[in-house]
Amino acid sequence: AQSVTQLDSHVSVSEGTPVLLRCNYSSSYSPSLFWYVQHPNKGLQLLLKYTSAATLVKGINGFEAEFKKSETSFHLTKPSAHMSDAAEYFCVVIGRGNEKLTFGTGTRLTIIP
Amino acid sequence: DGGITQSPKYLFRKEGQNVTLSCEQNLNHDAMYWYRQDPGQGLRLIYYSQIVNDFQKGDIAEGYSVSREKKESFPLTVTSAQKNPTAFYLCASSSLGSYNEQFFGPGTRLTVL
Image (cartoon, rainbow over all chains, first blue to last red):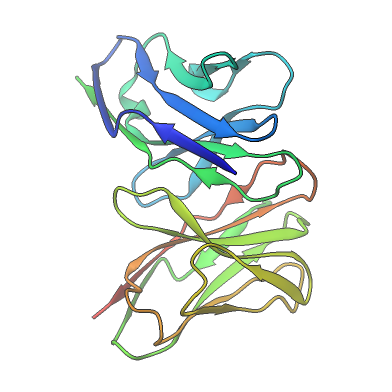
């Protein structure tokens, strides 16, 4: 069994300040983890993925995430928020040999001008 | 351009009517998926297919049906048996194999009046 918990349903930051979106996971096997972004009324776009290579993963648009097995976490960060980052972000886990994704409930990121 | 198309973008139907949502991909992916998204929730898997003429139920298959007659197409029918069909529906596709990312279409917003 596998699951993800996104610890904040809504995060607000000022433009130019750091972003932190938190995700904890649970998996019976070594997991693969993803972060997806969804802009309003759009499909989901992959930001980055972890598949047991380097624990610090760099993605698109300046985002990165660090896999911490001891803390079962995969938090998403960005040094400086931009207005275009305003969207819904989903943390996703897939277990070994399992094609099915398990989604978190999402974190809505608001950027304050 | 390679990608996934869903049509229509918005769909309105009267209660008790069946409705079919279209999903087409030209990525040559073997696997295709249908998800339902409700406000404040993550995506929930309705059906998925890993090969033509075969598909499996996801977590919330009741009241839905699918077909996979062609590799490129995976239409979803929302039947009158679905108790609460108003939602945002997302189609996705991926290559087979572990840890492969899923590519998402732009979604169809279904409203049942």
